[in-house]
Length: 174
Ligand SMILES: [Zn+2]
Image (cartoon, rainbow, N blue to C red; front, side, top):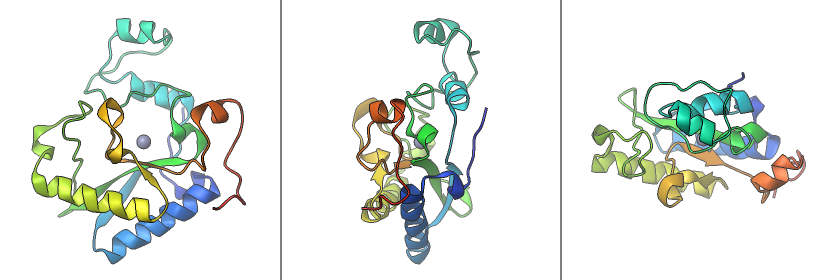
């Protein structure tokens, strides 16, 4: 099982955008930490198991994965996450040194304490900076897929493309 928070574990086109994003955040005076870059299939399945029961996991075809306590934090199983293909990272802004998760209303890791308006405003600023740097921000996604802390650059490739063995090319910086 492998989980990394090193930017070097991102494919180059994603890493370049992540570095620009972090530099722009610094310029904007926003403290931010990257919590995860690459996550392999086993690590993704372990994350998927959080907050799910034996029955859920069996129904998802994950008979070999053990349920884990806590809130549900992802809807992606192993193979379904861009983290596995080196083009996604998670991170969170800090206020007074404390992470501001800001996951209001998406049903994932919901904590009413995160729903303050100024927290959501902070996330909107972070998301806008990410998008200006060429990243997709999952805080913009609709419904159950929305994940404030998830950013990615896929170069137009889909999960099906990645599963079929395609990868971001190091030279392919648009
Ligand atoms: Zn993520």
